[in-house]
Length: 165
Image (cartoon, rainbow, N blue to C red; front, side, top):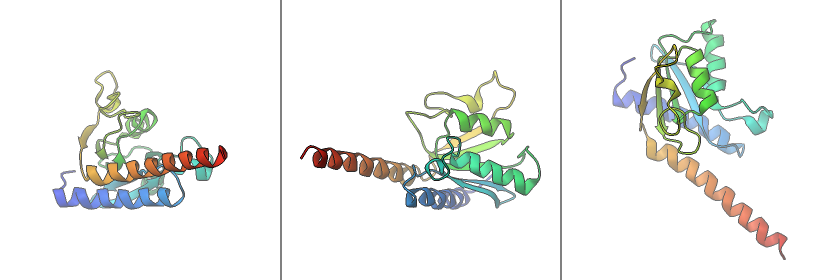
């Protein structure tokens, strides 16, 4: 599970490509890939709106696919790459799937559960702890989210102006 900087950036770029799938569907642009033996075994992107399922976060989708590929709920010897710090639900799922290593791009100050608001992945009270690394292509990951939410706020303002006339 030792990756070179180039490999980390390659896999995070793959996660960003997943995030673009969400963006194309006007979903919050978060993407995820799960890697084992330098091969991607699971991919995911936010699809809550598309599938009308609250739990359809990028990490959950990638974990489901990796479970199917591996034929096992345990995803030992894998690394999960995700563009934005996992939330509480996804951090719990990562632990339950026994994923030993998480690399995320940008932190999530409002919902992050891997160091920002909570630190579920390294909590010594839990039976599974995860090695967490942050900051890989952080600027690109954060920019995608910031652009998405700025466009959403601008559209909301535009609608308010239109509605008031």
